[in-house]
Length: 122
Image (tube, rainbow, N blue to C red; front, side):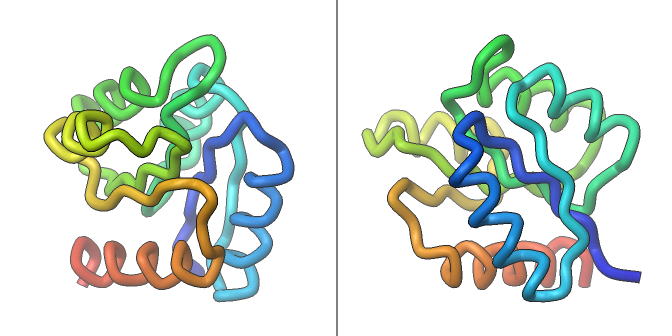
């Protein structure tokens, strides 16, 4: 059974590109376009990893990450346009396993997802 990745991004084009590359790499992919939907999906479907944008409507990515990490041990790869060092540090200190800035290489995203899953799921 393939591992499941939840891609959370409010930009449909970015979510679609990430999802397509992850599916092509053999993952089962769920998508959400805001923080509230992301938490509901994560709680219902228990993904193996979450790719999380920080700039989300309704509930921001940092709050989603904080909530997910309080409830589960799901690994999180942040994918965001926030390139400031302070944003990267905040995300990593909160518990993110990796941090990728936009624009991003979809192949690099897949490689980083694979690496985090290898570390966290053996």
